[in-house]
Length: 263
Image (cartoon, rainbow, N blue to C red; front, side, top):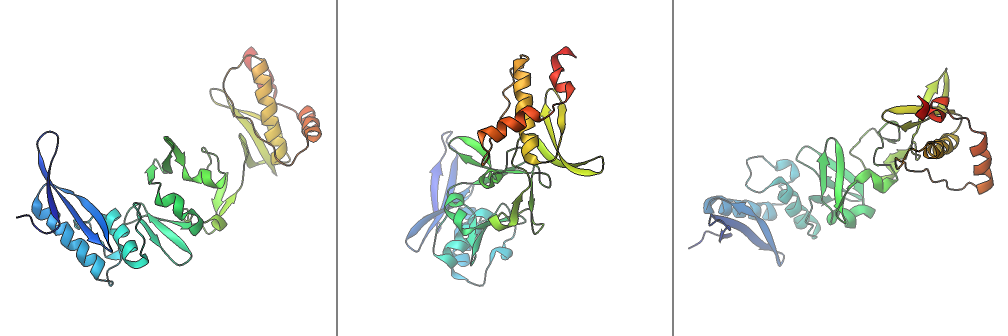
C-alpha cells in the first residue's frame, strides 16, 4: 500500500521513482519527484502543513525542506490569495513579488502579473531573461531598454533597488544605439560611438538626438565604403524629415570613421 500523497512511476530506463502530489481547493498539484517513497510522502505531509498553517510564511522556508522553494512560494500564494500560478509569484496589495530564490526577489507592478504568471524568469551572468516565442528576451526590454543597456548609463533604478521593476522606479537615460552621456573637456555632452572590431568614437554632440543622428550617418558612410556589418539604425520619433536631413548634413563625423578602410 502506497504512503499518502505518493505515486510509483518508472523511467524509460526502468528506474523506479515516486511522485508526490495533493489536491487543494479542488486543484490537483504536483509537488515533485523523489527517489524514495518516504521522501515523496514527507513532501506531501510538509505541503499539507504549509497549506493548513497560516502562520507559515515564505521566510519560514529552510533548505532542508522537501518542498522546493519555488513550490513553497506557489503554495503560499494559492493559500493566501486563492489563485494558482506555475511561477513563484506572491501577490501583495498593489504589486507582486517574483522569487528567483529564497534570497532574491523581484518586484513588479500588477499590470505585469499575467505576463510573469506564464513566463519563467531565469538569471544568467547578471541578466534576467524570459523565454518568449522561442527567443530569450531580457526583461528590461519591456521598459524600452536595449538588450545591451547598462545600468547607470542607459537606465537607472530611482530608489536604488535594482530588483524593483515597477515602472515608476525605472528611469530611461538613453534610448539610442551608440549614444551615451559623458563629460568631455569639462562639459556634459553626448558621445556617439560604433563597434568596428573595437569601438570608434564618432563624435561629441550637445544633444542625444544629434548623437543618434551622427550614429546613423556613420553607418551610411561605412556602408558606402563597403562595410557589410548589420548595424541597427536609430529610429527617430517626433522629428520631421526636414529637420532630420538638416541635422544629418551639418553633423561632423570623426575622420577615423570616414577613412576607416584607408587605415
